[in-house]
Amino acid sequence: MPTRPTRRGGGWTGGAVEVVVKDGPSSALAGTADGLAAIAPAAVSRVVDTTAAGDSFNGTYLARRAQGQAIEDAVAAAHRIAGQVITRKGAIVATDPAPPLAAEERGIGGIY
Image 1 (cartoon, rainbow, N blue to C red):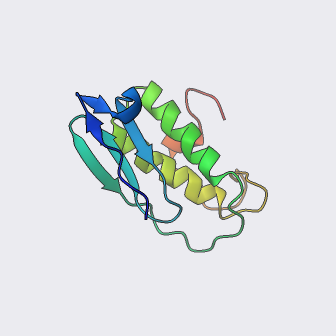
Image 2: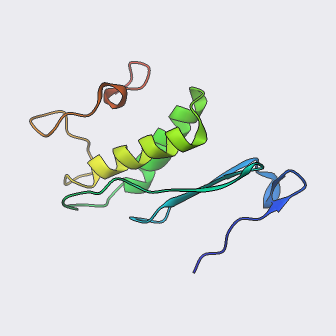
Image 3: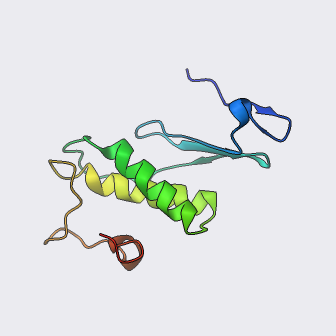
């Protein structure tokens, strides 16, 4: 069982001010000096290939936080993108006949 990151002096161990721990299909733990939250991913109907799911999660999370989104919203968006990636072979989010992503997830700042 993974241990929780611990707070020390207003930050997290190691000096981090924000910590997100992803655990595959389980809830991600997101923590700041204000507390710890568990954010569950949306259900995925069929897992095809988990290649780059973590990278997709991380990239989406970091991009959303850089845009100023709240930690919980950024984690939720990251879960959604990672959930899309694992439904296709080859670590690619489809832009074809698969169900379309919400407008907010088609691109971040015009980057696809």
